[in-house]
Image 1: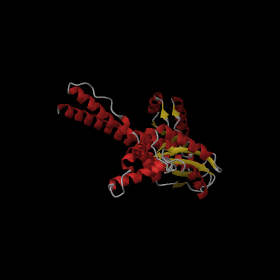
Image 2: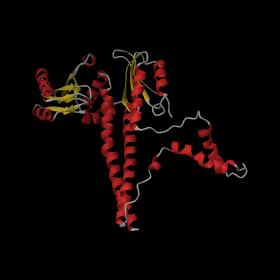
Image 3: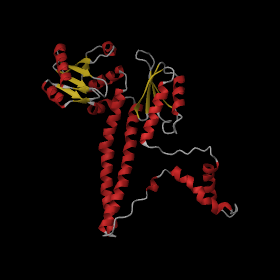
Image 4: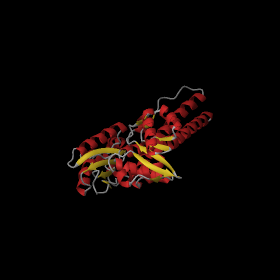
Length: 342
């Protein structure tokens, strides 16, 4: 009895700690990482507008004209707050790294624009020595982890939901693994607490996909029911035999077996390759695990149908959301669509 209590206590403590870590700390980190990837996959004009909107929520007035902000790769914008000028610098791309040299060049631009302070933003990262130099020059540095909480409320609802859903699914999977590990450790500790030898290795067959186990059921149940009359068979036996029969007798039946994350990544890469080869497609990339961003010549239904034809070949990706993005100077609007809901 004492060993059981010890096992349950250890499992509960470890499982609770794992749940708190993966569902709070790790989930927020994954959400920020997915969000930064989504920001990096945007066109420059969309990215810069979200950054300017975030500055407006801070109380800044944007002095740079909208036409100048939309033209080309404008990376510096003049701001004002409480009568004091400030300069905003935006460096696009998650691979970008703010260095001491980058800060020095930005400080020179501040002096030229007559700005007394500055904000330098990037979805990428920041060198440690760049932060010290920025503090001395009254420049606030914002990397991807700090940028995402400010920009997230300003994004389209569908994109924000995709980012949060992907992070939540990953957290649930990690929480399940944490509880399984906690139970195993609890059993081992409880066994030692009872003064006995360690238990035999856990039977991992219980972790096999249900679809795989279901195939073996008719081979066991078949001989025992072959000679029985329909009247003698119980309803449960008849129902079980009926459900199992198509899986054995009908070769055309397809079993949906869960795949590993590595296999799913390979499928995602295959989808990108196939979609990018279609007519009228400029670029295809997974902005999140459930959103395929496709740059197209036109956001038409035909383009959606052609892309969905590729996605429907993969059971794990058929429910992904397709984000059609028109050319840079096009008057068309971005469109979202889901090929399948199951």
